[in-house]
Image (cartoon, rainbow, N blue to C red; front, side):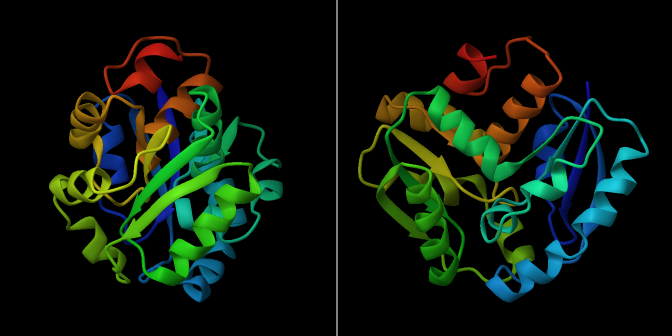
Length: 219
C-alpha cells in the first residue's frame, strides 16, 4: 500500500515509523517551531502540498501534523482531494471513538500554549480530558530527537482514563504502545498509529498489524 504524507519540513519521525508497514511518499511544508503562529503559517502551504502529493497517486493521503490540524480547521482543504485524505487529528478522534473511549489522557512534547489548544479540541469533540502533560519543547527538530522512552515515561505518568493518546507525528511512539497497553491495560494510541490505521481504512486494507489494540482489532 502507498500512503502520501504531507508533513512539516522538520519532521524526522513519521516517515520512519510508517515505512515499516506501508510504502511512504512525502511532500513537506515549512515548520521549525511548534507554536500557534508558525502552525497557521505552515497551513497556508497545505493546498499546494495536497496537489503535489496527489501527483504520485497514493492509495490514501494523510496530513501528518497533529497540532497543525487541530490549531485551525483545515478539513475543507482536504475535501477537495480526489484521493481519500485525512488529517492526523481527525484520525485520532475516529480512533478514540472506535475504541469506545469517553475520557482520554494526553502526552505531548508541546509547550503549554499548544497543550491548551489540544485540550480544547478534544473537549469540542465530546471527550473528557483527564490529564494532559507536555515536555515543553518548542523546536520541532528537538522533538524528533527524543528517544521512545520519553513518550513512554510521560504517558505512564498520566492519570488513568479510557485511553492514552501520545500526540505529535514527530514524537517516537511505536516502541511504547505495546508496553503501555500491557502495563496499564487500556488502549494506547499515538498520532502515527492513528494516522496509519485511518489511512489503511480509507484504502480498504484489512491486514492485521501488530501495533496495539487499534490496529490489531479494528481494521
